[in-house]
Length: 197
Image (cartoon, one colour):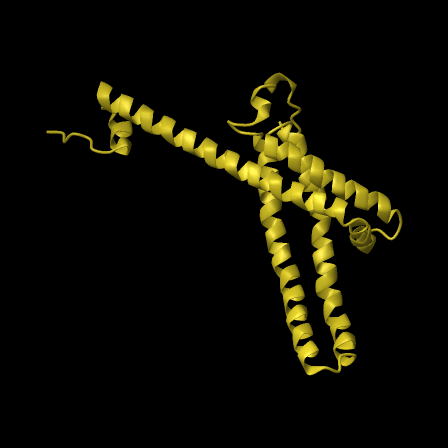
């Protein structure tokens, strides 16, 4: 005598679905895929917003991006600072809106790859700069403040490398996946340019 299957897995193995069970499982699956679509859209918007805000900050703090670019590029730092800012703003807006998502995400991937070298540069240089500054500070209170700044700056670049890995993975995901269920790309699906497809 066979017992009645109790789980979806059991039913898949035996093929013993009643019409009610099948309908219930279809609803569950639909609810789950809707939830995945909402979470995916939330991740896409937050990721795009994060780069957009950083890019606009670069515009407001110009020529800071040029100074950062000069760490990697001894020549044409102005051009590379401008390119980095355009990649962040353009990629961020596109990703947040789900507009030409594969291209927008790839722009962010292109921006992110060199930033690892910037973090490694500061991790190497900060320990050599700090003693010179420390020795020039006579006031004990100011020296204490500087030690805190030194620790925080070093820690920020250590964490920055790991954070950038997460951002890179997320941007690469959307470069391959596209906008998902709730992006503008769904309205212009015939015009979306796919790079990794």
